Amino acid sequence: MKTRSQIAIEALDDVASHMEAKWGVDRLPKLVPVDLAEKFHRQVAKLNDAISDECTGGSIANVEYEAKRMFNAWMALDEAALAAGQAPATGQWMAARMSDGRSLVICDGLEGAHVWRQQNPDQPAALWTLEEIVKVLEGFDLVNRTKHLFEGAVVEDARASRRVNWARGDELPDDMRNSYLAAG
Image (tube, rainbow, N blue to C red):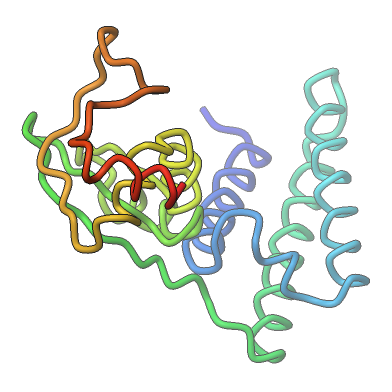
């Protein structure tokens, strides 16, 4: 049987999940005035302390009380962000089917990734943010330089192989080599 504090925490988890789906993970406190964000984080600490105390024999009523105050803290952030004209997370993404049947999903950021995952909880996917893709592609300077030099070039296939000397790359015809190296 669940205790009143467990029921209160489960209800609070639903509110927190709703707010993170609406605003993005860890984004809402950043959209409100600093004093309100500070109060929110203090309430998080009070709730965590009450939960820890309950685990060591503390008051169940205290957890329930702090959970209700945490609910109010979420509502205050939501109201303040809306009043300030802040926009909820867009959750924008693009998706394509990969050869193994999974989706490749490219999200506008962590907010988009969170919203996509909330809306597609059982769909297998390789989920990437634009920032992650930039980090990966920056490691492939040869491809980036080629795309720059040959405007409109399309990558038709890509494989990592131990036999490829990525520092040297593929052999280029003599008439292209000088212009390619100059573009670098």
